[in-house]
Length: 160
Image (cartoon, rainbow, N blue to C red; front, side, top):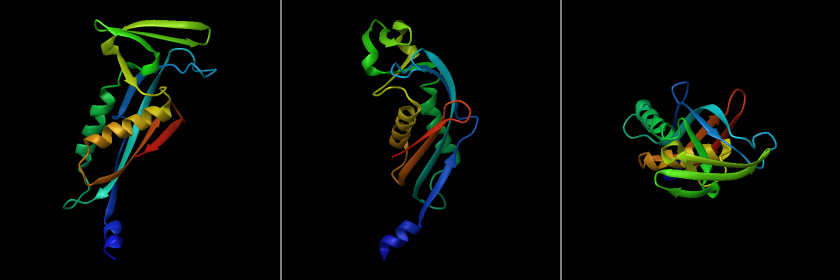
C-alpha cells in the first residue's frame, strides 16, 4: 500500500523551446548521406519525473539552467566519437575518418571539439545529454527524458 502512495506522488515537469538550442558539426562515416562533415541546429526538451519536495519536483528555472549548462558545452563544436581521435596533444586534436569521397583528416583546437563515446548520431547525443543532466539533478528525480531535434521534423528521444 505504501508503494502505491509513493507512485501517485511522482510528478513530472518539462522544459524546452528556442532558448534550449545549440549548433554543432558532426559526421557519420557509415551513412551514405551524412558521411561528410556537416552541421545542425538542435533544440532539446527535457522532462524529469520525481517525488515532490515541498510543492514541486524542481523549479523550472533550475532545470533549465542545468540543461543549458550541458548543451552550452557542446554549442558550436564538432561532436565526435573518441575512436576518430588519433592524436590529442599541445591543445589540438587530430581526427581521421573515411567518409563520402575518401579520407578526412582534421586538425582542430581541443576547445573546438566535444568528445562522446559513440558516433554522434542524434540518438547518441540525446542519450549523452540525458546522462549528463541526470548527474546534475537532485536525488528526488527518478527519470529523465530528453528529446532532441536535428533540424525540422527529425528528433530522437532518450530516457534514463
